[in-house]
Length: 424
Image (cartoon, rainbow, N blue to C red):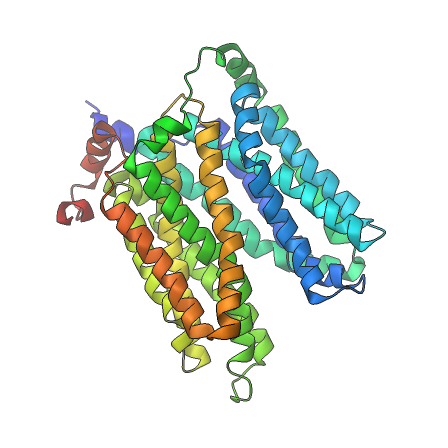
């Protein structure tokens, strides 16, 4: 007789979630194609470095401003329609960016892309939260994160090959990739979309007030803010500056400017290695242990970056910080999905979480940059590590979100492996 634990272990990821994972991979490749090219493309309009940075910041700012609307639309219209519309908005913005006649219009087109980005991000997270069975949410979140990570690694390689065809080509390819992703979701989730339309009015909704009453949701907001500050903000803005400037004249094997790119690549490698191997373990261990351990590792590695005596230490700490982040993100997403609950529409709950993460990615670089100008890199990285440790404190007093029954069933499959939760 097949036990409940054996059924749990053999539970496949639902096909409709696999469609979302495939779409995430397509999106990530496109994003990776244009991300390294966009700053140079903007600078070709003859504007200052600050104006170039504004093109990048406008995207994140509009993601933040329109996240509440994306949550409300997801609750009203359903996840897949909002997802498809979001992809098409970003696709249109990419095509417009490719033919922008002036810097001002380029800035507007990138800002509009941020609106579409928050539409498909919030609706995708809400869809995964509602559709993923509780006992495999960690595995689903890990697969979704892996698709993005692998796509982001492959994208710059593709972009480097495409740029020889002209500066507009990468943006047009990204726009085309988004149209393909929208088509895949629209066609392959047609049956799911029709079923959702019939049940949408009777589906219960997870409110922000209800989620806020749970300490685990408040802890998720704290860790989301900290991860946005460190991984999406400081990591992409201050770390490259430090890597390019701190070791000039040190006689290292590569140019200091190239070291910045290598440091980011090593961080990504550490991230991918953990996401691909350990992300699903939150279905057995619970969500708290990976988040707490990951935050602590990333905090210590990031907080001590400023003390790096040589490039090798910088790269080693970057890899460790990436590994810590790889523990955080899938478990954090699974925790938010636990709070929303299977079968419920939690668009507003997810949008507030996304807003908090985006806020960290905007505030972090600004404050860190200000500290660098007045106190130096050591203090900026130290503050970033402290922010992450404060999030550790929030999770230390928050309860586990993995449903107890599902956790017991999942843990039965790990009889021969040590369970980290038994030591906490």
